Length: 363
Image (spheres, rainbow, N blue to C red):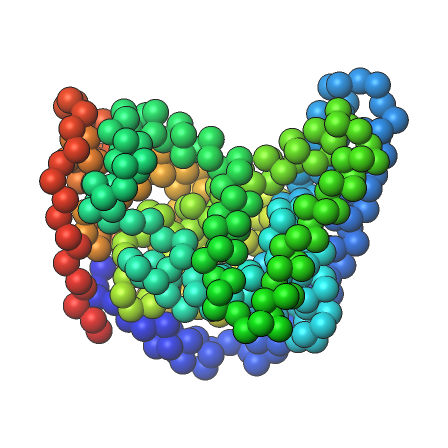
């Protein structure tokens, strides 16, 4: 792979090849919101009336899908890919993100501005993983990375069941001081509203039904969200230039599953054009592959998850991951990540000395 290119180099070339209406909102996508809400309502009703635990569990899966579907839709809405109306965008985005307990205004700051503006930047992207020296400076992280790689991977995948919602609370603490006082009240209201709503549901349905109606679906929705979010970037190199073909990954699933997940896996396309509806992402992917076939990162979703399991989550430098217990180095996407490097190294657990990442040459 060649050196980094800036996002605007891609957008300029692609806009000349794509129809103008691709960059307009697609209001018809809003129909998913009442569909997901109806699915949630029907499954909730079924859980309340059935005495059978197995059936409650099955209906819980239906609610989990409604929750993650609403999360994917909220992502579209709050990027402006469904409507440009600010009030409608805020209300529908808040409602769609309520199961995952994320505020719409916070999301636009955390995700739209900070993550998209600084994707995979080693210091400025709030969703990026750290470099090796962070592991030896923070006691909890240092302890974690002294554990066997398989145990650490198991914990990583277990954390998918809660990480998205938990991370949102950390982003609230991080970014709340940056809002103006008037906006801060909105951010706080949107953060407090979902827990109050779900507390009301708890009192209404009782603790046992609440487990099936909310807690189990929340875990499932978090896991599904993180299975995409973690694979979208964490196998990619660190970049100081915002280059979506280097710092992002498109994960592919069978067509029916891509339809059910609203095309969220086509993530390079989303980072090139954040306001573009996933409805058009496949066409954008085809054009990118024509123009920059050697730069495009695409994997089956299952293989990306396999790579995520087998590689450590610390960067030795901008283009390599490192296993701190053994010193084994793994390449990132475009820079040597492949099946042949997935064999576990045999060595006694011992933290290796940190090496500071060397800055990339900027294009």
